[in-house]
Image (cartoon, rainbow, N blue to C red; front, side):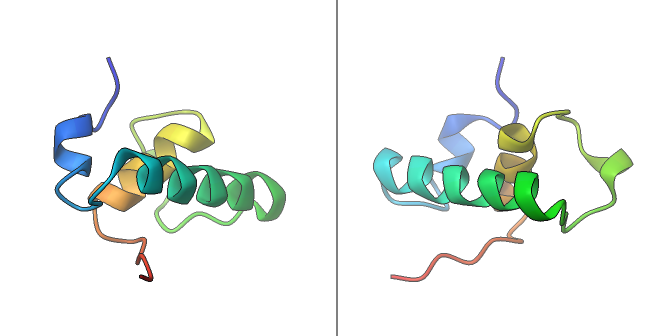
Length: 65
């Protein structure tokens, strides 16, 4: 099961397509720069995609329109 839930994330982002785009960009950035916005031990997920989903849920990623 994915954490956080897709239902919670769609309250932050208005479409699934935008969600996929934002998360893919952030996870690539995490892999290249190894820059995390939270302490690595505070993430539930071990992979960058899950970690970027957690950052979006916590409001650490700002989406420009």
